[in-house]
Image (cartoon, rainbow, N blue to C red):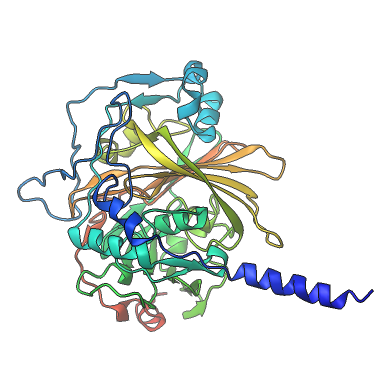
Length: 453
């Protein structure tokens, strides 16, 4: 029997499946964004017992005289916790706790806990972003097996998602403002309970995908994000810099400047499970911002939606001095706010023929922002290993909720942890918007021109 035709057929089917695209929803279904769903696809209604309120598109008021980048006040300063969850309460609250949070409660039963506050749905967006999201609903589609998209611009690409990949693209393209400047001061925690500063620096981001001056288009082809990162401390890393382009359909391109070499080089390893040297290798590059990079290493399963306790409106914690933000092995639970919200759940399992040191992951995305707020990661033996936790805060610019920065990554097996991109107010603004940086600022030539020894 001649097996070649069968083999060629199998190859053709495999190639066809790898290039499958998923079209946007119908115009009729998109109308839900103006009735039962919010403009970005969350449920407008609250939950049955009222512990999750209805969304009403009322933004937090901006205090008079506020300037972008200044400390953002606690929007609910007088509130007290309505519930405290400790290791003794895991079973009673199991359905609303991620596996990673349960593991943290068990590992640190005498110090880690959840202080749960009343829930507030304060995530709103500029009207032009909502309008673009409505257009994206019927236009955006995935291609190349979900690893790329087209037909989207200036809004959430898939407000009514049908696949796990669509949900993850919503996270990658969650609204964070057109351009930002951030002075950061990262921390790592050792197994002995010591705190170390692996790096300080400056991050500037341009989001061409969210340019308010441009009209919606189904043919957006620029990088959706351009990022420059400089390290200023410690002294032996001062002057090191990265430039990253992320695109909708061509993956990532990155460059690195090393002062000792006095030149800019392409950096193809800046991604996936390459240890992130900005944080002394304590996290992988795709663990930044909760998930950062390409989808092609995993198969993405949309599990569904559920109610969970997640960090939210953590402005008060953001404004505390470092000694009050952290305990020996984790955040200080006294100052950290949790709320009950609905989240989308997506599971990632290693794709055939691919490799990654974290073979299974689970992500929980806030329905009102589409940003990942919690994550779980398992090792090759099926043991819980890595726990991600974002610190959503109410941004007075816009206003909107910034839900994926800063973040914490716990290595449960080593007992270590890292805090990515918390504010360094002593050096300057934290997440200042409106710098109006030109695209020419985000080029290898510009990176080389500002290089120092």
